[in-house]
Amino acid sequence: MSDERIWSGASPEEVARDIETLVAFADEGLSIEELDTMLSDRLMPHLIRYDRPSFHSLFNMVPEDGALHGARLALEWNQGVTNWQVSPGGAVLEELCCRALCRLFGLEESAEGTVMYSGTYANQQALYMALHRKAEKEGFSLADEGVNGFADPGRLAVVTSVDGHFSLRHAVRVLGLGEKAMVKAGVDGNRRMDTAHLRKMLADLSGTRDVFCVVATAGTTSTGSIDPIDEIADICADHDTWLHVDGAYGLAYQLIPEWKHLFAGIERADSLSWDPHKQFGVPIPSSIIFTRRSEDLRRMAIFSSYWNLPDTVEPNPGIKSIPSTRPLTALPLVTSIRHLGIRGVIDRLRSPLEVVREIHAYLDEQPDMECLHEPDTGILCFRIVPEGLPGERLNPLQYHVYDTILKEGRRSISITKLDNTSVLRFVVLSPTVTVEAIRETIAEVRYIAESFG
Image (cartoon, rainbow, N blue to C red):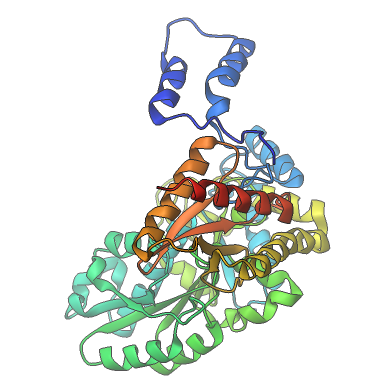
């Protein structure tokens, strides 16, 4: 078993003591060599090595070579691409990249996309556009009147599953609706949205709430499960309700032929979010929102007197989303795809999913391990259940294992809760992660559990 550390394992206090030197700002500057020495000694031991096979816990990995090349060019040349005046090439590249991605994912001819800072902001914009369309149906402009234009704003509601991402809570807060606007549908045995429950819920709510958006998830962050999008799209069509698909984590896996069927109906979504940094190995920020109708992005447009002019004919990405400063995010994504080729991209995406499937099959045969779902993607939730340990001690045991592994600094695993059950979680993004590396972590889980009092 490897003893190589992926980070120092230091306490927050120890990390702060080392890093304090970096922020002791002084009148005299340091040479680049002096800075490198200070960073190497004080900061880098406390940064996590995403490139190690023993890192299999969260949605991070080092940039792929092609992406890194594009990122360096962006930093050296045009960091900002808000509009034509700032970067003609950057503005056009973003427009063309988003169109090419629409074709790659099989979206409708009318689909369009724009770059965002994160999936959180993409989900927020999707809900705003859904609410804007709801307002238009009721005869007023949400941009002009806000939620006060609705006869009873308290009736407005957004439906997602109990495993929907917490960024949706941010979205309803920012929109001024409050978390009371969130209504959560149940999930089935594999943590996918229960469509029978969704249909009944919408019928029950029809007299008291105005559901303006249903959010399905293509790869939940807890289990990686993919909601039955095609069925949900049918239900939304019956209720004339906007369908947003949060594909921040999972959308890229739609490109793998053996996994494509899980994403049936994705082209029917009114809006769709994606974080390329989660699977493509491109630098953060790297998020995109797609809309089925290009005119929906026009709802975001705000013009000024000095740029983002209303009569500009050149490409103007800045009017499609909130940020008026936007980085050249499209370039690392484009250079990565061109460097790898589509076949290379698919092979890179397939590798971690196959690892997780093999680990699931292995754990299913272990009497002291319990899998909580069959993996749709590259996430697997499980827990160790030693023989004879009382049930009330199982949740504390999982936290003990998690805390111990994190402090040791040799590997990385995550933890989450499914309903009231605490579970350990593997998140495999990088093709460097192997079955052998994860089995070593499983052995470590067992070893730590033996010392649990």
